[in-house]
Image (cartoon, rainbow, N blue to C red):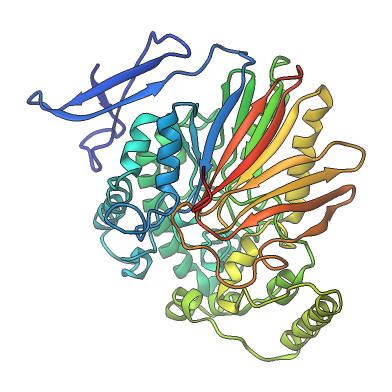
Length: 486
């Protein structure tokens, strides 16, 4: 079967798709890709999905946050070798990659290039990043032999995209001196978005009402959620970067358009769908709303001040060089934090120094941040409502460079299993994790609490099983850690 380009006109990236039709459900196929001269260029295999509404067991893997420092020629395989072993067993239906499949700001940091660099040259550099990440063994072998779905996160663009002031159309309208900064950041984003579309997203199921032309239109910010079914299970994959602007008063993470799509998807679930897994690259639950991290850093405005003043050079390097400032508001913030630390010490809890001022975008990224938690609560309640029809529900996320299993506990209902899996390649988070990145047991919103079951600071990926042994669907997660896999 012939390949078709993903690009219109003269190709810039050379990406293409071959469409296979007329396949039999639940069947393994092998394929060969040949060069124009007939030489074998690549080989692989895949297993088609079961018939619609099939109610046999389902197993799939999820992972996030890769690194060029592992696998390939490195002596450190991360968790890729463990995932390859699982792939060889032949029981994975698919892999869900949760974001940060590539890092535009690792090794050769493209964000450090001049922002006025020729845009075609910048896109060429970005495409080369994809080639470097995906040509390593065993990554290339895994992607060639298992159906794989992908959603981007910040590092496909730049660390913390959408949570820094230079990324915000809302702040650009508010502060005229910052508008030239915003325009340069927007051009970088649009180049990263174009490369992401052709290397990753174009292979996903379509987003209702949004095609490639609409998604890539200059001067716009649009999210591209998608959904697909495997048997009687539906996966709903949300985009927390495409339309992100944490200073926007309404729907600052997902955006109004994505909310319309989300409501339509939830309302349109078939009655025969007995289980729903919602994928959000930034975990919907991880830390408490008023834990030490959000108290110390959640309302800091140091980088906003730079943007308001139009200090482009200082703002660009702020994530690497940000330092504390003094002043009454700062003292008040640290006084509140001191109270929290004292409470932690009295009750024997770890408080630690995982976050620093340079991590402001990571703090704003988290769904516990005061500017986005209202939207998080609405998302949780919208998804949890589908349980009233007897469906099993679960959440999966990545991003944090830590692995964890948590339960979301709704008053009067069975717990909702939640998986955080990160990173398959990135080094685990340094410093204290519990009570900084992860809360142990905390209130989310009225009638909702979170409970930490386990966590890991080793390379990891996740396995999700849907069983129907007793008739009703049951979702469970396993955190597969480097050095612990059997």
